[in-house]
Image 1 (cartoon, rainbow, N blue to C red):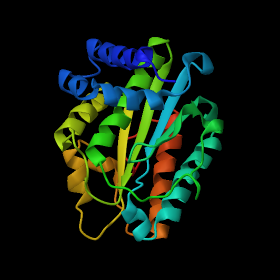
Image 2: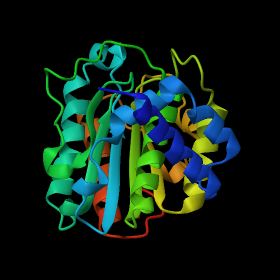
Image 3: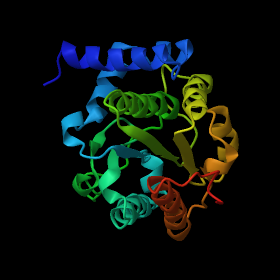
Amino acid sequence: MKNDDDDNKVKKLLEDAHDQGALSAKSLKMLDVVDVGAQIQAGLGCTIDDVGSSEVVLVTMMPDDSQSIAQAGNTDAVRDGHNFVLEALGGSKQSGEVLAHTRYLNGFVLTPYTALEHAVPMTGVNYKPNLGTPLYDQACVVLGTVIAKAQELAQAGIAVRTVTLIITDGGDYGSTRAKPGDVKAIIDDMLAQENHIVAAMGISDGSTDFKSVFRSMGIPDRWILTPGNSASEIRRAFAVFSQSAVKASQGAQLGGFSN
């Protein structure tokens, strides 16, 4: 049951991040909105008491659940790719230090931050892509959730690194609040902290220039994947991301997907 304390908790975490120089005034203004705060709260998940490690890696994925995924026949590939990332992380020595969070592009929270072993896999029941593409609005929400959770952990003396993957097969369609520059302000703040990786996967729709879209959002070229519109290429792109997520969980300093 959500209450005012939940809203206040998110507000306080974001304001603390701003006070400590981790979040600019522009980003804070974008995220400090009641309904955005409520969406962020929905993803925060486990409490500090549930975290038994002194170091944590937040692995966050935002799979596209727009209708074009289904129309292109890519539902299984996106679902399998997401699940492959969880499996790869589960097989790593640092799996106990990973908190996973999955929020679909239209806002449905599949898994709020939780220990990797409790992360919910995508299935034919919980993943039925049939909506729009509010890319900019929801990118702000998911990144705000990463920032708020990282802030919560840091305030408890836990060292935090984050790896986030945004997945879409088209440009923005349906955002009502955010523009690319708003997302960029948030990502610029995150990258300045040097403990965040923000990556994106643009699944070819035959027309969208994903490098241009993601650049406008502040995502560096080296963290952009652009698979073609085939199951094998999509699965391969998820495998590339999973390698980076595993390396990040092991404390490696990553310069991009090619490393």
